[in-house]
Image: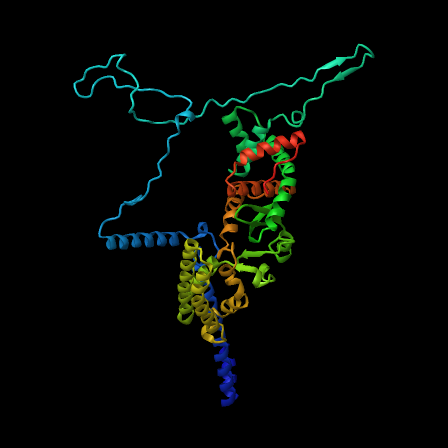
Length: 487
């Protein structure tokens, strides 16, 4: 506004000046409120880390990691003061060691006896006759790799001429020989190192030469992986059926990339198995494709794609709730009080659950959880009221009230955990794989990753050797025999 416009308003009289000042004040207050809200959102983003959100610890800012280390040091000093002594690094007094156990003699390939050359007291040298094994001796075992040599076998298909008709007939190679120039053990090793240990195709080519002395091109490594993916098709489908027939399944998802296009990797995990599926996005339709036919209890976080599931058939993750309460505890005024109270209740809940894991008394768990449930419901109902003081945590509180039964399924149903850790642990390997490889390049690559990672995680959960399973599978597939299952 310039001077002439201001003089025009003044000349219009007292009423025009008042209306202009009121309008100017209203506009100013509105802008101030918008700026305050923007500052609040920016400050909240700056405080966002793995403790108060779903962000992984690897994305924490350096300052936050330094603060956490300082906090750990402070707690260690407080512990030392309480104990009345200085606490050294490493294992503390009373800690049970976990030294390497010696193998029994029948499992040792070679025994080498060592004798002293001379007496440690008088210096007299021992004769050859005196150097005999005694009943007491020290034992030290050394594990070593034998020379790794790839065995090359040449199969010759000879032609024979029939003396009767003169026709020449060529011999047929046995099943499993003609399919590939590489044996099942070598192929199983390639698949295991690629899927379980996340070795890239190019690094696998170099590693095969350095470790095994065999030349493998990048294309040959990929061909082995695709052959394994085809062999895993039926076992993977059987594994999917097994997981979806379980009474409880934990589900989670993470980002993926195929040929520079965004994808989502979904997982469904149980204590004995895990399956993976790469899909277009993380929407509700993809979840329904993943768990089609599942009728049990679904454990998950509170992503909106799970909202359509009946709260009576669902368990929400309390670790995510803990981070949300922590985020609100860093707020101001009533929001901070709400978050602090929620954190205290969460701590009591986990303490009660861990006690149940020891005593296994379900009736006692229900009884001890009742006051925690009552206090939390009262806290959420108070925070869910419409008020200016609750504007920052009101939506969170009301959303928890909407899915209230899903917070407590673990209290009454056997086999249900209060967290979604099973699915999150299953995704740790794939997340590292994605960071190293930047995803996949084709649909065939997606199928290999889905099936190979399902085998890798499932074998780990079942305490099985992935290499032994892949060796058995690839051999049976080459011969046309029934395939071994993971279900």
